[in-house]
Amino acid sequence: MPGKSRRLARLFSIGSGNLFCIPIDHGMQVGVIDGIEDPERLIATLADGGVGSVIVNPGMLRKHYKLLERIPSVILRMDQTTMWRTGGPFGYDGTHTRRVSDVREAVELGADAVITYLFTCARDPLEETRCFEINREIGAQCRELGMPHVIEAMASNGGFARADDPDVVSMNCRIAGEFGADIIKTDWCGAEGVGRIAGQSLAPVCIAGGARSGSVDDLARTARAAIEHGARGVFFGRNVFQREDVAGTLAELRKALE
Image 1 (tube, helix red, strand yellow):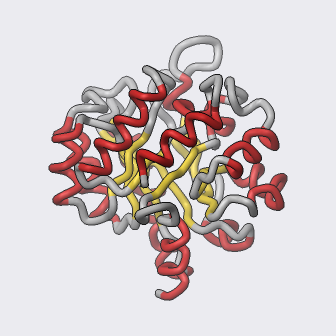
Image 2 (cartoon, rainbow, N blue to C red):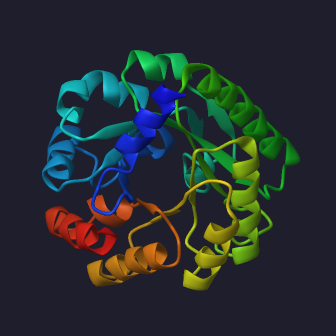
C-alpha cells in the first residue's frame, strides 16, 4: 500500500537509510525514570541531535505533538507490560501485557508506525498467548489502514530462556516475521548472531539497547557492528537518554549509523 510505503520511508530516513530510533515510552511501563523527567527538554535534545524517530505513548503524543513535529517520524506504543516491574513495591510475579491503544488512534494522532511487544518463553504460557492475540489484532488493523507494524520480539524477563541467546533471538525474530512485522526490534546477541538472524529474517532487524551500560564508545561500536552484520538500525533508549552528555552520544551514534 502506498501509505505504508511512505511511512516506512520516513522511518529509514538517516544517512545510508538506517533506522535511528530513541524509545521514550518507558513511562507507561515503569513510571518516571532518570532521563525522561522533562519530556519537552528531552524531545528538543533528540530533535537537535538528528534522530530519525522516537517511540512514544498516546499521552505523550497528544501533549507534545507540536514539538514532536521536529522529529521525522513517530512510532506509537500500542501496549503496556509489567515485565520490567519485577521485585520491589511495584513488582508483579511474572509478565503481564495488555493493549492500551489501537491503529485508528495512531492514524488520528499522525503516527508513522505502531509497535507491540511479543514476549516468548514466559513461565506462564497464557502470557505468550496474550502477546500473540495482541499482535494478531494490531497486525490486522495495520494491514487495513496501511500502517507499518514494528514488533518488539524478545524473551520474557524471568522466563526460562536467556534474552541474548542467539537461538532464542532467532526464534523470536522468525515468529515476528511470520506475523507480518514490517520491522523487528530485538535483543543484541553478538555480531555473528545478528548476522545470521538478519540474513534469514522476513523483515528488517533492528537492535534494542537495553539498560545503560558501558561507555559511549562501546555503544557506538555495538551500533556499527550491528549495521556491518546486516541490521538495519537501532532502538537505543536508556543507553542514550541516561547519559550525562545526551547530545554527544547522539552525535557518536549518527556517525556509527551513517
